[in-house]
Amino acid sequence: MGRFSRNKGKTGERELAHELTRVFGVTARRGVQFQGSPDSPDVVTDIPGIHIECKRTERFRLYEALEQAIADAGTGVPLVLHRQNKKPWVVVIRLDDLPRLAAILSVFQPPPDSVQEDDHATVD
Image 1: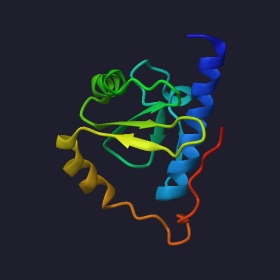
Image 2: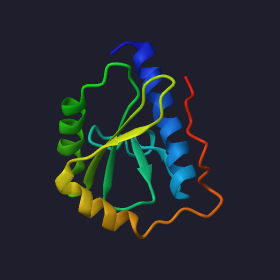
Image 3: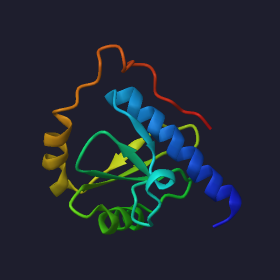
Image 4: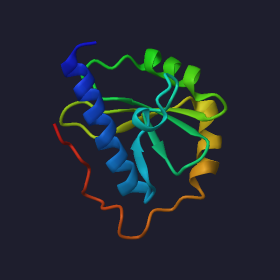
C-alpha cells in the first residue's frame, strides 16, 4: 500500500471517528494508534460489542472488507463503514448480525442536538 493510500486511510479513520461521535454522542478514536495489533478495529468507540472496519476508497471491495471485519471481530458485531469522495458514509453488515447490532445500539441514543438532519459530511 502506498503512502497516499495509508494517509487517506488514516484521514478516513479520523473522519469516521468524528462522525460516530456526532451521530451517537460517544467517544470515538482511531483504533490502531491505541491498540496496535493487526486485528484492532480501525475505529474504537464507547459502544461495546462492535468491530469497525473503515474503508475510505473509491474502489470498494465489499466482500473482501466484510471478510476482514468478520475475521478480526472475534465475538463483536463486524461492521464495515465506507465512503467515497463526495458521498455520505454507509454501513455494511450481515443481515444475521443486524438484530444484535440493533440491541447494542438501542442503549445509545444521541443527545438531542448531536444529529442534524441536513448535516451529512461529504468531505473530500
